[in-house]
Image (cartoon, rainbow, N blue to C red; front, side):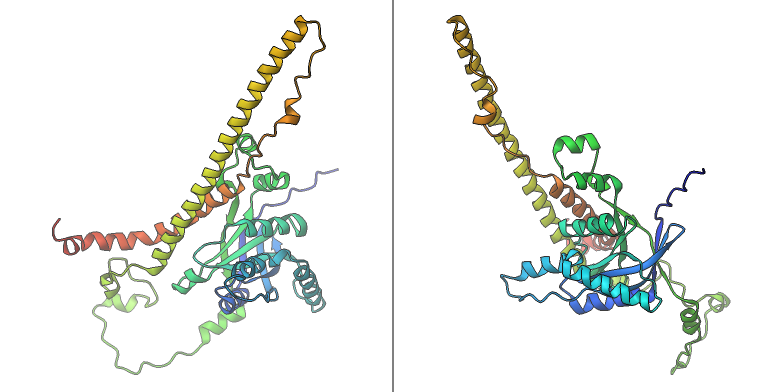
Length: 364
């Protein structure tokens, strides 16, 4: 009997343009709250094709200061809510009745400023990847980044190593050293492509354009006639945007969030150092007690008296429990995410600042 063929790993994600429009619309309507929903489709030769989506019902929680965090947490945890799971199954059943792709292939969420690597995202993806289907993904749409003019839609999966560690639930220093798990190994990002049907592509090519209302300028040379007007100009092409010295507010906010994540990481390290100090004090007490008990047993042995048990320290002393290192891993991965965003914006801003440095700082 021939061996069963091995499953092809997921290599890429193909999203229909209509699904992208639905996600953008839902995310914009619920902003600044988090929008979540289900995506359906099918897998073909290692490419996950997403053909439809629908959002989860909105969470009705008062938006006062006291309930703001609870509302955000409830919206982020919506994919694994029992009521939403029932709603999702009903919707998929209706889609199957009208002969539409009804295979659950994951979920989507909206975010702002790239702030999505947290415990809720990990728990949601773990729930889908463990319960629903191992070959599911999480689509992340960044509303703030998309508002800058470039669509931000990314696909992630949990790595097999992290899935195994998360099932065990032991994120201690010893287990992380044995498994070699690092913050790079939490998520696996898959390339995303947007697909249009042939009818939509044909319609886009046939859309009529308005005639120019002003007289067109003559081309400066013959090469200008052969150049495609839709081709972007080279980076050093003269334009007025290069003279804009204002720093992008998206960059400023990302830097603030980066500093906040670094502070959270520092807080977690302080908690772990406090645990190590507490463990050291308890171990010193246990060592002193064991030495004292050995001396007592030596004296009893000399007096031919029954010896006292030497393992009684397990009942008298309680070692502190090591805090989970999962939050440290997530903070490290989030810091890396912010650092990549900053790196993508600093090149243009830094070159402009160096160019006008002599005018801004005439004393130097």
